[in-house]
Image (cartoon, rainbow, N blue to C red):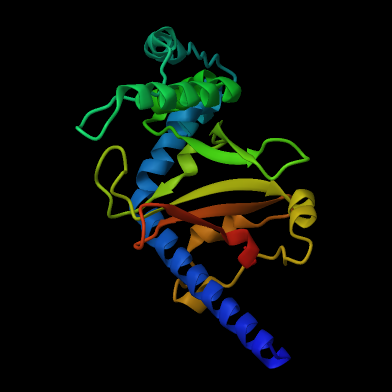
Length: 257
């Protein structure tokens, strides 16, 4: 293939990524605009459970009581643990159940054993209960399933159940309405990464944020916090493929986030 053809393919590939980038930003803007109220209230609930004085006292009340006692008797964790304690005792786990004529009991048992292996190596019980703890506290909780190399000397991969550092920040398709979000077309999973790690992982990427006005988003405020002096927000963009039931993922950080 000629050098011209190589350059042409590179240009086409770059153009395709730019289209994906634009689509992702527009969808994030639309999704966040719908969920902003829920997200803000969820963070407020988490702060209230934390139980600091400024979390449970109104700022005006604190100003009016300068020099006077401002007690905080945080009873909320007790009631949260009443719910999550039952979850821990029930040992939540994934079960495989054959349900139709094409299903086989022995195959279900084999798959169930494989899933138990994945859960055991992932310490999934802790992951499940951590997500449930967040869900009980603020109404939002998440965990994820990913793959990783079995060890440094192989290309074989194994499945792992992992927690999500900030489950409240996970953003689903604004048009999905099922409680499980199984009807969602896409989802965003943000992670805040230090600039040092970002540069090590993507040495050729620019850690400067981006101009959202190029996509007609104007001065949308929720993108302004994606890059600061200490951290850069890296967002996984998962989108359903129309050609299959699988999900494909692109890391928007590779597109200069």
